[in-house]
Image (cartoon, rainbow, N blue to C red; front, side, top):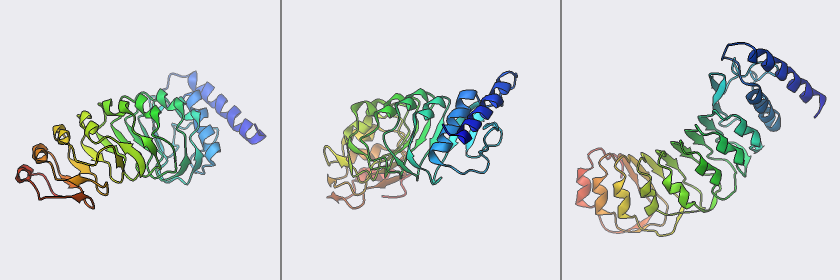
Length: 266
């Protein structure tokens, strides 16, 4: 450890030790403060408000604290590059993490599974270049997942389709990633499913997706789909947008779709 980094760490330890001796919950915990400094130095971030020897929960931009714990970390398009270190798991109170639009590479650290309250995870438009990260399967409170355009490969694990907390899923533009269209029907709380430019085990729209009674947006353009539009999708009463452009679908629009009074785009 170089002297500058030693001084930063020592100063933060002193600051957080003082904070911990008070009854105030506005101070960031010692461990989380040091984890943020590690991320800052690893990524060479230059946020003007991220000042060493100050409390991250007192004015550091791009994060939100609740009860002395970091609950939101928004680093979208922050110009960072490299890997996501294990230190992210120290921020176990994270509910919202946005790392989108950065030059980040894989793998995702196993420590991410410590973030048991994670609800929103945005990892899109990075250069992860990895198989589908199985650590995501540990995040059983996850509602929003965007990992589109992330250079994922391989197959979506079967366990993914049992993550009942998921409402908004964006997996599109991962040309080497293979999914099972029919199994998405198991995600019964889905509101938005964006799976364009993916590979599939079968390239036919399955009837079972009609069971997604809360679905409002279904985006599967550029997926080499063939066959016809399922008659059963007329039961998707909440559907607002159904994007199947640039596929090899045949036949017309089923009469049942006249019941889709909320549908704006087809």
